[in-house]
Length: 513
View 1 (spheres, rainbow, N blue to C red):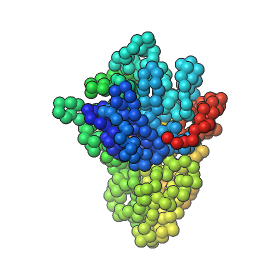
View 2: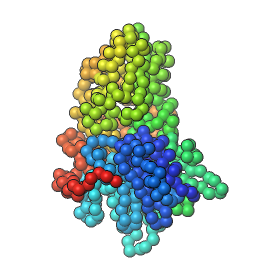
View 3: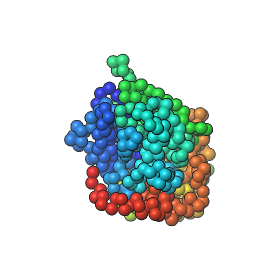
View 4: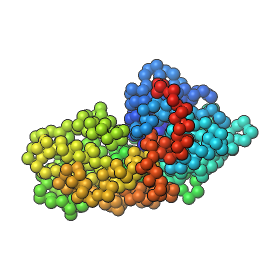
């Protein structure tokens, strides 16, 4: 998961891009990058680290121009240690273009081979985002032919060609040198993307971002979500164009965004995320009432921060006291998206601190947004028992995560998922809890769709194994389990010979920006 941002304004945008990335920091803490455009010239700075660490005053001074794009990268294993895979990515043919991408492609091996050996383009990293950029560049090249200018309709035709070649999840922002900002979303609307604007002195500026939470602090108003398969183009002089570029587009957003990833103050595909999480607590309360001994539960506590709305509503619905017993060190990153089990396990104790007097002698129901690998849950249950809890029950606002997510979330293999092949009772035993309750998938869908009935369905692949792009089968999942883990799809999916070729290119890369 990543965060993308793009702005076309009438004043320097470097500070706004920086501030916007701060608002999207929750979507990725591994690397950050900004590219601005001044005439036909790009100015770029990107590196590993949090936004506040990547950019210094000297970097900001060099980011000149009234339009730009930005990216925060979601950390995974593999080449996440290399700053070469920080985004945006750049190509110079047929036009100078930079691209930032949130999501994951599922046919990267096919695309990689076509790009490198049919289109004769060069890919220098393992990132599927760089592959995506080269696919777009090739489609634009086919539209322009021997001409020297690029029309808006040609841009949209190129996106149509891209949709026909690419499968997976993607929310994308692109700067085309001398032309403007392009943004587009995958035909299933799996990954979010929204549009905002502001008008000053008779001039209108536009912004595109993964989440609407980036808009208010920058002075922009939320306009609308970009539709599945739609492309939006904003010219350098601030003219907005849009077109549906995919056949049979449908709105199937990722359900896990509402459970975990999105900030609660975001409005995503017409759904206020905070309200969705409150309502999750109500439906979860009914299942807790059916499956756990309520008389034995003294207090309900959230595992901060994402689960707090659900836990508060659950406690109120059950008539139980609500307490905050675990306090979070906000300088530790999200644990389930950290590379390596050892790192995750160590960081849990650094990240959460239990207050002994809130737990001593009490039977506690802990509420979390989800249980993925179980590492964090196991450590928390152990901490709570050490703090004096007599019994520890666990409730998850999400259903059991039983399948890999191939659309941009680091749930890569079934073997790593604690719910794989286990019942709720067996999961409770694995994490050391006295009982575990999971939200029902149908209830979760109902809760979110009730806030926007226009949503046709959801991507729920990590819960039910149904992959809506239609190209993920058992063979594909087995290849994932046996493949090389990476910060993108390329290392997992491309042929070994292509992986070796890609690695050899970067043997001399020292990882410095």
